[in-house]
Length: 184
Figure 1 (spheres, rainbow, N blue to C red):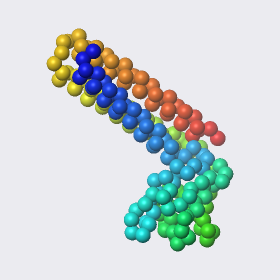
Figure 2 (figure 1 turned 120 degrees about the vertical axis):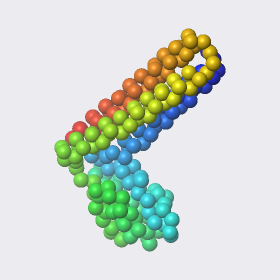
Figure 3 (figure 1 turned 45 degrees about the horizontal axis):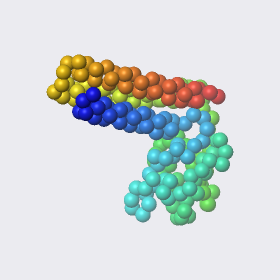
Figure 4 (figure 1 turned 180 degrees about the vertical axis):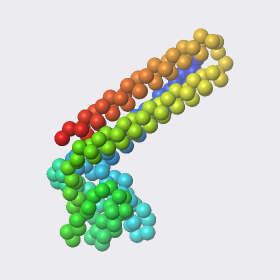
């Protein structure tokens, strides 16, 4: 096979891998009923004038399935962390006990579960769009390569097979997440 075509296929595969890892990261943020440190992973705290991720100013843990405990490394950061959680609009009500911040994660209602499943489905669709864009880009790049018509057709077939494989992966990942969300 032509080296340029192989490079195009490798680039497409890399773009599709990135779409899958992005999907997995986004799905981690969608809570499925039990507490997880990743639920507050995108909270940014004002740490002496600069926005810093929560996990860089405090220890975040889950003592049980319905509680997130945040132990700041500096006691003076308690109010800032509490404020940052409120600003992040995660739907949590943090409680400050003077030593740490505790967040009780409420159990999900059926309606909320459906909303979260819909949100997960939207993330899966975004990943599929990214994969299809990578396919389109690879096909366009392959057409620019100066080779025979057969090589172009074979490259197109290879790109389509790659796309189908990654779309199936997205569907599997979404299926697992949907089951996790809908399980009471």
